[in-house]
Image (cartoon, rainbow, N blue to C red; front, side, top):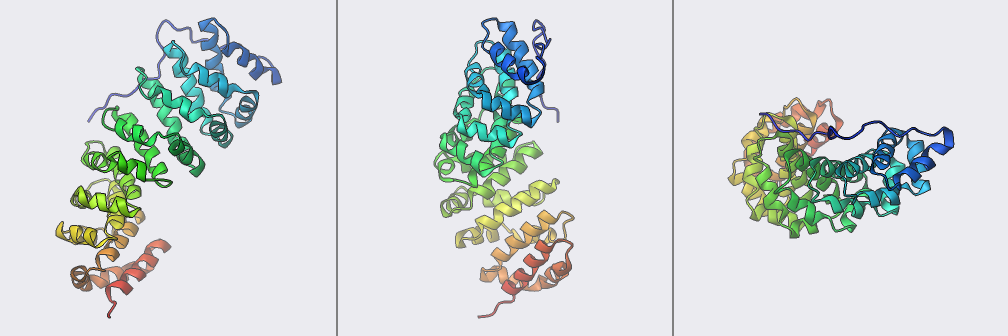
Length: 340
């Protein structure tokens, strides 16, 4: 299925020539001056040159030290869409470096970027969300996004954004949910994520299942996942052709079935047969999450009764190539064969 992609190609009337870069230590200070120039073309050329320079972490460190981030925050609201596009691109590249991410936190770049949540230009929003995604990969960045009160806005954007941007939002949310899940729950994230589980895009299905894995860690999340009848949908995803979708669906089931009501919802949805089929899956992540989910279900008498007939399947995994899988299989056997 073909999908429209967001183009980074500049408008035809924009001169793509970069600003001449000064020699040595004068390079960045000169660009700093040009970013503040009243002439539009000067600002555009300076940003294009800066896009090349910030691939080097040493230049990112110098740029942060010289106060570039304050100028870039100002340019995020420039009337010219090309200036906004290249500004978000610069910030996106800077976010790939630890020194850049640290600078974002210290200089309030996250709230400044969030001003583009409703920008009319797709590429500007995509660059913004890509920067958020990279920030959310580290705990400090995820905390910064949470403390900027952006979770509710990100959740609601899943209803309206382009598919390509939805993927970035789901990745960002997965990182932030490891830090704090209650704001997302209060915004109604679970039913929105449930809808994404049946999306035509494999990437969106997979990332939505991963977000549900995170949101179902707290007890309140588990309760809402059960209440919104997400568990039967997750069971259906166990037969998805994509291994990452299967792995994340099994992981979300693992968390959701910690509660008694979750266990019985999964048993009612006939989760054990498709889970058993995946114990020998070629992907270790799938095997691991599946065995853990089955261990949860074996804690229910009905689940244990069924799984006692399949202990041999778990014994075969005791010598699995993955140490984590073999340990999980050992624990599963102990739980299944437990006698009061």
